[in-house]
Length: 206
Image 1 (cartoon, rainbow, N blue to C red):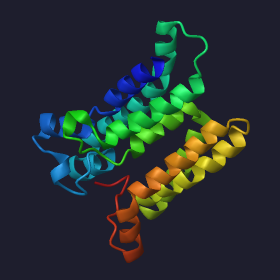
Image 2 (tube, one colour):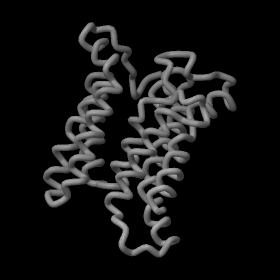
Image 3 (cartoon, one colour):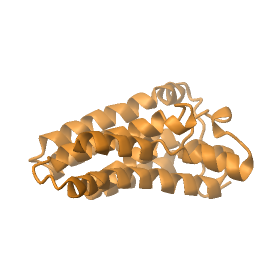
Image 4 (tube, rainbow, N blue to C red):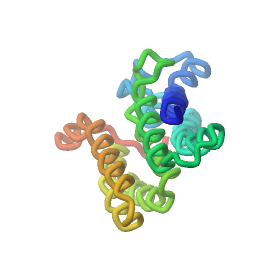
């Protein structure tokens, strides 16, 4: 029962289409019809600007963090002390990301799941998240490519987990799968990076 409840709540939490709702409510714009056609933070920054982008990024990260907390509440509610919190948290993390990519509240057309992935990383392994964020910022600021920063951070995540969580096989393999998923979601960006046609974004400019 705890796996069913955790899965449903986490998926619905991830399904909150922040970019779509804010775009339509504040600007009467569906971000999925502009830019990269993704309902994510990066495309929101590109299409609607920094104010909307910061709000979307913050909420999408928060969705991931909250999803990793859901299992604690569910286990406490059911009073099942024999449940594997580690496995439940991985389930919650995966389904929150799936919800962001395929949101039930937005015709299953969401974003790439990078911000929500960051949120689940923060919830599961904060130090690894901090290291990956640091690399993302270095790569992004120096190259002005958000996608390159995201891919670099995704590649680093399993490495940091390997050293920070040496006794957790589940967390390590989760980090490998998550890293692969983020990189796969950027397959078109990788092609554009190789062709020199990827869009740049200036963090400190308009």
